[in-house]
Amino acid sequence: MAKWNIGKPLSDITKEKMRIGRKRLFGWIKDENLAKLLIRDFATGNICLKAGLNKPSIVLYSGVLEAVLAYATKGDRDNFVTLIEESYKKKLITESNRNKLNVIRDFRNYVHINRELLGDFTLTDGVAQLAQETCQSVLKGLVNYKI
Image 1 (tube, rainbow, N blue to C red):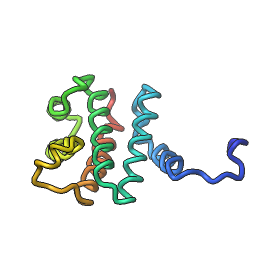
Image 2 (cartoon, helix red, strand yellow):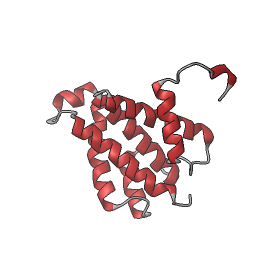
Image 3 (tube, one colour):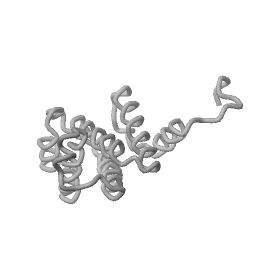
Image 4 (tube, rainbow, N blue to C red):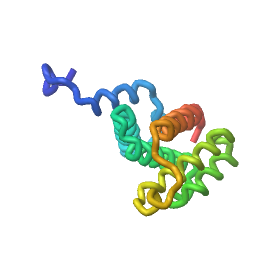
């Protein structure tokens, strides 16, 4: 343990980042700065989900998914739909995850208040859980893929 940390409790976010790091979900990403940001957002998404903060968790998981697909495909970072389709064509994701990603992408757009007002759905615990599980599934599939 580092000397500066002796006797000091670790924050929830630090504990979550360490837990994620041990799983090596982002170990395949060579860009260290990107990997740190992805771990931070995934950890924050997990904390938000545990706290019942569905909207931020969905937005964070979606951002992680979009970034890892862009990294894996070296694709257009501005078009989530294209990234999903390109990832599926390259067999980076399963058909099941492709379908889930399209659902999550729609809910991610609720980051815009007007979309949420016009939408027919509520951002529930189930949607947030779907986002987390899809994120984990996609990451586990990419861990063994040679980029």
